[in-house]
Every structure is written in C-alpha cells, then in structure tokens.
Image (cartoon, rainbow, N blue to C red):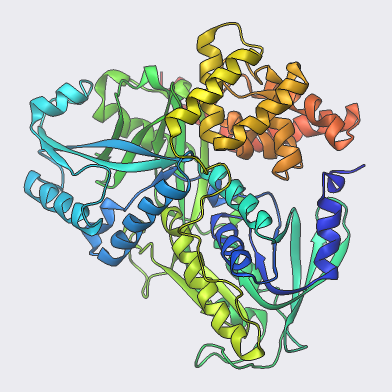
Length: 590
C-alpha cells in the first residue's frame, strides 16, 4: 500500500475522473479551501486539488493573526480595514475554538514616525471601522501605565502608547478545518495531486489533467469553471492553460490566447515574510506587542504562542525567486532579533535562542508602477477571469479569506447561470460554524475535555501536563477533541506525548491520517499538529515516533518509516540553515 491508499483517498482520486464538476478549485491554501467550502455549500458540484499538502505554502507561514489591519490605515485603505474587521468578528463566531481574542499593546517612542495624537486618532478610526464592535475599545496609556503592563520595554524615549484587541489563529489548522468543512459539504478534495495541463479547446467546460504525486497516475477532470487559488504560484498555473475559444462572460478586452497571455493578465508581486519562534522566558514580554521596527520603521509583532513560546515577525521583502524556493535568510532573522532587543533590552536575544524559523510569500496584487515599497503594496484582492471560465484569485489576507471566497464564487455563479447551472442554496458561510465549533461555551467545553483527559491519563505524569494537552486539544479541534480522545480510549499508548516538552499527543497523528488527509510525517508535524516548529532538538524524536504510530495506518515498512523521518527533517532543515548561518557569523564576530 502506498500513501495514495490512505483512508478514502483512492476513491476520491478516482471520482475526479468519474464526476462532471461545476467548479474545480486549484490550490489548497486558505483561499482555495474557502472557495471549495463556499461552492459546495451552495450546492455546486465542487472539486479541489492541491499539488502539495494543504496549507504547505503561505497559509501555514503567516503571522497567525486575524486582524483588521491597523497598519493599513496609514495607506488610507479604509475599505480593507472595514472588511477585515467584519470578517474578524465572523471568524470569532464561526471558529470560536481556533480564533481567540488577543490583547495588544502599541508602545510609541520619541524617535518614531507615530506620535501620540496620530496613534489615538488611528485607534478611534480602527474602532469606528469595526462599528465599535471590537472585543473592547482602545485605551491610550501614558508611559507609566505602559511600563506597568509591559515592564521590559525600553524606557528611553517612551511616550506611552495604546491598548487594543485583535485575534490570533493557528493558520494551518484553520485551513485544514475549512478543507474538512468543504468535504462535509460534498466537495471532492485530493491533496498531493497536481494540475499539469488545462485544456480549454472543447468548450463548454475545461479538462484538467491531474497527476497524483504519490503514484504518478493521471486523470482528466471535467469542470465548467476553474478557480485558480494558487497564490504565489498563480502565474505558473496559468502557464499550463492551452489555447481555447472565447466564451460569454470573459473579462472585457481579454483576448483568447495561450497560457502565457493568461499569466500576463494576472499581476502578482510576491513578498517574503519571515517569522521565528523563541522561548517566552528569553523575551520578557507579558502579552502581544505591535511596534515600529527601529531599523526602518515598519510595523512588526511580538506575539505569545502557546503558554511558553513567542512568535516574532514579520519581514516584508519583495521576492523574485521561484515560489517553492522561499526560505528564511540570516538577514531576516537578524532583523527580527535586533528589533526585539531594542524594544526589550533585557532580552539579549541571539541566534542560539531561535527555536525555529519559517518564511512564506504573500501573493500581493502588483502595484500599477514600480517603486512602491513592500509595506505600501495593497492587501486588497482581485478576481480576474481569463481565459474564459478560469478565475484567478490573487492578493488578499488571511483574515478576509471567507469574504474573498464569497466574492469569487459570486463571479463563478454568474458565469455558470447562462448554462443553466445554478446554486441550490444561498451562501451561508458567515453563519455556519466550522467543524468542531458547534458549542455554546468554550470554557465549558474546555472543562469537559480536561475532565475526560484526566480520566484517561493521557500517559502524562502530572495534572499540569494533562491540562496542557487537554487545552491544546480543545483549541485545535473544538468538540472534535473528543474524537481524538476516543482513539486514546481504545489505545492508551496514543495518549503519550509526541515529545516530552510539548503538549501534542500521538493520537493526533492517527487522527490526522484518518480524518484530515495527512499522507506524510511532514504533513503531521508541520501543519496538522505544528509540533515540528515548536521544538528545536525534539524534532527528530517527534518524526520517529509519529512515523511509527501511523505506519499501520498507511502500511509503511520500516524502510519507508526511515524515509519519512528523513523527509520531515529535510523540510525543517530548509529554514534551519539560515539559523545556523547566522549563528556561525555571530561566533566569527566574537
């Protein structure tokens, strides 16, 4: 048995060829996942294929924020902030376990671009654009009040600042949960299945040749409309479109042509964003901080992650390389460390403190003229149709993914209507909870999961460890944490931790394969569970233990298990290389 024979996958791959679809979505990041969920819930026959694993690109490499975009006010993008603020409120409602309110402090300094009056005005505008329905209204603080809340801040030049709220999310878990929602709504979804050619010559409809990356098998998928939601890979995807005739509904002025012409009509300017994890105790902050980086004044974040980690990000550099080659650089990591040291002088962070690093590409809509700096490029999104019946979604931000998907499917729905293909139901993605989010009280659910975890023991030595694992399960899976615990009940060995210092359980690995379409150890460590980025020395052990526990699920030999461990460590090594290079430079200086 190969990974292609993971539970239900062979049937799903076969059904790609056996079903005439209304909509084929290419790309399994947050945009594609949301489009598939929306289209399937409206009743369209929907398929989604992803060349790698869900969220492997940008959607697992973000700042993990659901936010209105305070810094976009500087560029007068009021519509964007208003939209994101509404979507933040929606996600807090439909994904309560995944999206949590987060208190921020924004310190300002004498040498900064933003003064007290400007910040206060911006905060009032931020509140107003959320219709004053944010978690709480902002509060301006004098220097003493700011230091009382964040004692580690630099005192020199501190003018005070502001307190306000946004929200935090596990980005990869949000993608996977949305994918599961699409499947449960009727979509056919297959990961590690790449579109290698799109034939538009037999109108109406298109034929996409899809290759299974696991087995090499190929099938043709028939679809009336295609949504290209491949982000930074959008132009590469359009390059695979063959010439075809023009059809009603294409964008005005768009001439029929080759894939190259289609790609040239999509304006994407990728920007690399790098983030790092460090131990919270090494940073010395109490909560979430947003501040101006002293090197260049761009806005960045220091964020709590889990109970003991800190996420620092992000850089913003235009990227001209091939999307799959994006990686953190020594310069990126040095920038983040220096900015943190200057904000929190006692931290004294160095390369040896970096637990992990990751870099992703924001698929920004290119500015109309060269010369705009990275931070000034709009986070607005576009839906462009060309060639006929192929819709490319570009730009946007994680927070607005649901709205972006709704607007995209609206366009596709209008395109399909003249052919007599109509939605069976109205869009409801802003009302229906995501899988695991059907509960009334998060604290009550947390209490129930804790009680059951204590009864099962979870293979942990202390009540504190049991509680940490139970709380992580609640946040990651919501009510479906009980399904993970069902596995522990049947096999107590699955209640053991993947690595001793992290709360993740072996049962989650099995659940990832059975219920979340994970095919490789890499998929589990870095996107389903995230433990691969939360430990430095424990990743090899985590990879080994996960490979052992899922081997029976996927019928792996011992040799295959070893290959999977090597593959997972190679994935981690891409960004670790930058950490090692920076550490070597630091030693050389000393």
